[in-house]
Amino acid sequence: MKILMILSKEFTVDPRVYKEAKSLVEAGHQVTVLMWDRIGENEKESVIEKIKVIRLQNTGFMNILPNDLFRNPLWWRMAYEKGVHLHKNVFVFDVVHCHDLDTLFAGVLLKQKLGVKLVYDAHEIFGYMISRDMPQCIVKFAFLMEKVLVKKVDNIVTVNEPLEKYFKSIVRKKPITVVMNCKDLILNEYDPPRNDVFTLCYIGILHKNRMFPEIVDTIGMMNEIKFIIAGQKENLYESVKFRSKKYSNVHFLNTIPIARVIPTTLESDAIICMINPSDLNDKIALPNKLFEAMVCGKPIICTKGTYAGDLTEKLNCGLVVDYNPDAIKEAVLKLKNNPKLCEILGKNGLMAAKREYNWEAKKLILIKLYSNF
Image 1 (cartoon, rainbow, N blue to C red):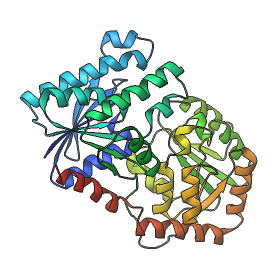
Image 2 (cartoon, rainbow, N blue to C red):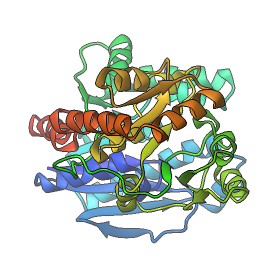
Image 3 (cartoon, rainbow, N blue to C red):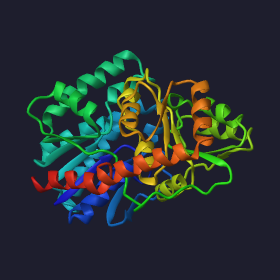
Image 4 (cartoon, rainbow, N blue to C red):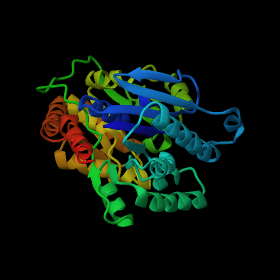
């Protein structure tokens, strides 16, 4: 089967899209990823592990528009026109697989024009996500647009049970498949850390709802603690980079390739991922950090009152604390001063990963979905 994935960000920095595309290729399908290269720093076409990647870059007119809210309709049109061109001349695809709401309009147009199947892969509830920064009128429009467009899809794929419940509430009689963002197993047994200094790690989104940049000060002022940070060049990247320079125990790695995320995590003693429980999107999310910690056998520190916190408590694979600096400090010291507790929590996470929360198990769900087309 030939699959066209549409993505509104760089393919190489989105682990979910990369793993899904790679797994489908390994299962015998052909995958081309059509993505929006907003910055225009990468080559327009490339092949990554047998996955063809085509990057659509902003036109001159798009660059003079004030923000992506105004650029989105032009991106949808570009993606649609390129998709039609590919289908007629290069890559006669059977399925359009749209990642998140900011690609779905183009996918619906392609389905209507070409008669192909349409999969909507919802990484999050888009309206909740943009409610952080957008006016309420835009947020309401996003919810309305999703309710209309989702009726046109053949299958919905999403990341966890709360999102599955949400989509069941807005559309009837559409198959919904949950494919969690789990990671590949790398350990057969628990591997204890060997650091001279207790090392915390965070690799991911550098956003205010992850307590950045304030968390740099919180941990930077703690003695005998090393804090490793890496993230993409967006959101608070520059602020976190600047703040990190104030502390000798904070090591800012800039942006690292996907291939380095797990090895860097494995070299740490614990993972930290504080997400804002008052943020509707974060409250129901399962961050990649949780699954990375599990496969590496590392305890995680995360937030009370979130779905991620609930799962952490259920699996007893980390510490769940209030969303404030004092609670973070207390949790860090608790792990630092109790290596046995770190081992117990790390082993619990690894056992859960081996039992259920691993990509080998989750990719089979995705592959089965495609085998039914």
